[in-house]
Length: 406
Image (tube, rainbow, N blue to C red):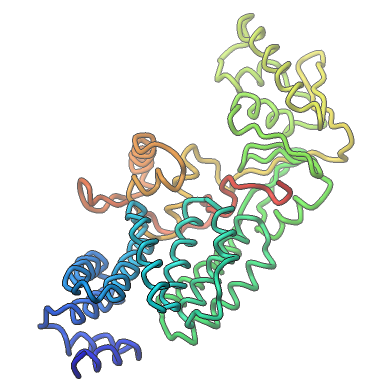
């Protein structure tokens, strides 16, 4: 490299973005394009940054495989921060393999960290944990250590392990301060604040109160009989009944749990589960069938007893029954949960993260836009959706994931 590129790289490492840009702004050789791309990313122009990095990767010659691989890793990081989840994961893996094979173990470890963050973002926690266990953190510089600890905290949060999450966030904050990257420090602070916002709502014996994630963790560790409306499961101690794929049964058990120790009338159950306006004979027959299925599903935990006017829940051994619900009930709560991070998302990225199809996500976004809860930026393929962070909105803290005892 010549002296200007060396000076620009030194200025970039010291956080002098404009100084770095000034030295290479008019140059189109590969190293200058790469530096300009990184500067643009740090300045917030991610579209321009990715374009410059692609140009730099093409400009590097066949003997400069390591430099090309570094450009791919940098572009993948920008895509991840931009919530563009459709970039080629195979390209990042190929770049990581190249870096590792050429002895650039630091950047190879950083690429691995990006892969893990991607897995976390789309909810593949088991794969993320396995990859995390194989990562040698001793190789990571401060910025990558901060990113690594953010991943550790993210997994701990989704697993509802608040002490582990707080410890990881403290380490991430220390590493971000050591790296002297304001954007990274802001990301750590945002993640920390998420633990101070309500994660769920507790409903028991007709009363409601908001819970932080730490309180949710304590509740799950207690002996309570829990009807979890965030994950659509019923659990007591180490027994979990999954009802996520059976919404009618979950609607019934939630109605019964909210009324416990009292009963629920047949008319109310019909309205709750079938959206029926009156409990005519056809609805009553259907209700009997679904109650029978619910009895079968809940047999390890509780019975469902008939009363004169309806039905009541009868746990085998639990002393209390509680319902865990979103802080704010919303039909499109999972979509809002991802948008609440303050980043702009494409509908395709949301579909990938939520494991849904893009058409369903687009309908949800259109409905939310009509209600003024989200806003669209751009048009066509470049359209992104975002919303400001608002207290009381659903967050990703309790989106469906394996429970602690699963």
